[in-house]
Length: 140
Image (cartoon, rainbow, N blue to C red):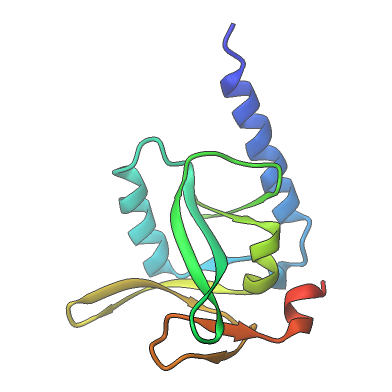
């Protein structure tokens, strides 16, 4: 008997419950443009469970955003869903991203997913990294 679908459903439900337990203003949101773009993109990646977002130490100001397809759900993940699009984020990264909105921006030939992050206090001139106040990243 294959228990993987049941285990996946349980992990999905637990990650969704962790996200739902947060105050609404600490969640991650998507613009309509981001939902439409991700729905199309994820449809072309059948193994993807959604989009994984996070942060890593990088750049001249401290942190950089990372995005990839989510192919699994870990015990540390929170699952945010909007209009059928799933976004997964680990709890450490959420401290830096809480309250952020992910947007899909088209500017001439440039098309990219971008964060509107209320926690950012500074970003570098190249736009590749950002910093947050220590209190926003480490307090509730």
